[in-house]
Image (cartoon, rainbow, N blue to C red; front, side):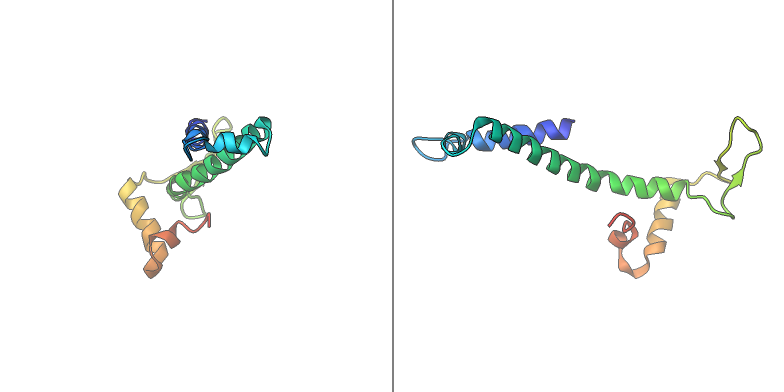
Length: 119
């Protein structure tokens, strides 16, 4: 929500900035399109930009969380307690250990390829 508001505010600032001695971009646009369309277009563009930003900024954290809690036959045991069914990691790993694991998986391809699950 915050990124949407920031982007929308920036777009409105661009629209209301003086473009010439006589008119702003918003005033020029209002001659050819309705104000409702401008509001709709700003909302859609703000939502699109905010969603891309959210995906790009949250993806590295998702990779780290996935690597931290990654299950598998050797990593995970299923608890018998019916109130608590799930994975139990045999040992907690530090952020450094998780990061090294992600980097080691990428080999010589680089860190960007290590984050490639999303792309």
